[in-house]
Image (tube, rainbow over all chains, first blue to last red; front, top):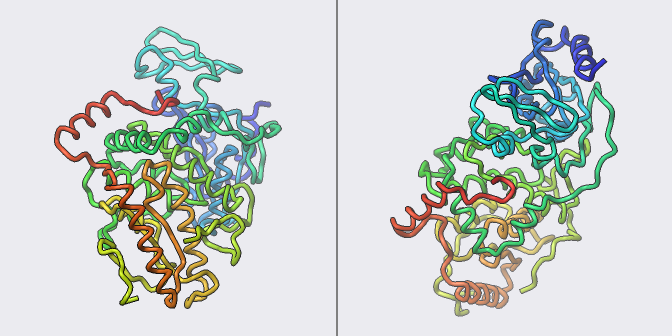
Length: 318
Length: 135
């Protein structure tokens, strides 16, 4: 039996007690997946898993608070679920977690870059072991999985769901934590270069708030300070400074909470590499507080607590 | 404090406790054109509100460490602990900090200064300079 069949039969067993089970189905073409809310057994036939199932479905959980739901999670998504549980934003008793052992997901951005022209509507996709074949307008192209793998999957150290009621697939031996070459390269730049980089990228931002809406940890919904008029933290002026300010709001509200699922960057319609900021902040949190969000149950986010003597904070003498 | 000479280009904003400082206050002032921001509170373990500055210490440390990735010079922000009875120390801290900011000069703005600069920026953004791993 394939992993998908295992998952389907596991979900079938729970369907009666749950409001719905959140998974993935094929989107507008075979190359794109979209979230699927399974309510009946008929919906179950449309379920897919695999490298195209990119979305972090933990994002939907807070919206279902108080109802019993099931959710299918990859390793990285399970970190978001843990973080939500640790912050008591969802109740463990209300959710059924179907964990996957994930082999990595694709980056649509990299696929677009690897194909000769913008694919538009894709007719068929055949997924093989380490490559897959995409057919567009009668012409087919073979893409190596290694070339189109999302950045986060290249250095993933949690491929299997950390918390789950049902674990599907064969667990991996976790790889040691590594850092992305592009991250190191960016951090090595001078202040002036980084400033110019953000000035340019933030001038592209259209402030659609897709990064915020896709973020599983952004739970303020209608009370987000970015859209509040009183206090007025941000004007509606779409200038690089205001756009950057919004990203600073996002990053600082996620300090010690961000699980690096990369949804903000994936959702960005103008390809702003937002994860450069998030990964850097997480590195600082790890350095100072030895804390990684969503790696273990019952952790307190570091900024919601303190120690009288901080070993790793050097209070600069004056 | 009243009889000590203090830098004249320093503007003091009073808050009840360093725990009142949202790190975004600092970011917002830097974005709004402040050349430097200094946060000064009571010494840890000596807080009128018992634990305000313990939380503040963690938050301020994180924002201090975060600034370099944005391209804002981290020397433009500093936090210190000066109690109400340390008049001389206060004078020393503010003079040193203002001197440092004078050396750094005006902070650059994320918004271009002239219309020509806006146009250059728009052209750059159109070509998508981008990050190496994003093409």
